[in-house]
Image 1 (tube, one colour):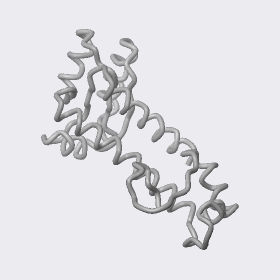
Image 2 (cartoon, helix red, strand yellow; image 1 turned 90 degrees about the vertical axis):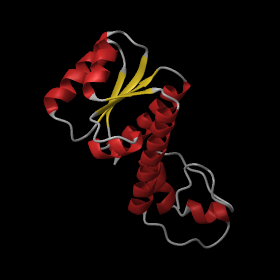
Image 3 (cartoon, helix red, strand yellow; image 1 turned 45 degrees about the vertical axis):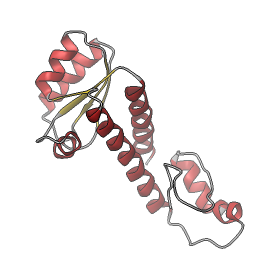
Length: 163
């Protein structure tokens, strides 16, 4: 079981987040050795899927924190205005199911301002996180929260690329 947040009770075993590390740990039975006993046989694909879901949930939680703290701008028009006005935007999240034309516009604006931009989650889910209707784009103002989200997004994208 993946314990990405390090909150589950009992003993655990650590491995890096890379797919190759997870596969090697399963194949070489390193979890059993680390835990000094018999473990439930781990299917590496389900372990990778659990890690994928844990990373996605962490990003969702951090975006929710951004909403509560007023550090989030949402909606394609509002985000484009903020990017054009050189507001201090730390990162932009574009929904996976947004139209290609709008996604390209936002990515271009973000690129000009050297703002990190990732395509992740659905419009419906972004809206739910923000307590609103569908949202195609979310921007997070610069700061510690944006940095934390950016780290998790990079881990998520690396996992998706490797898998």
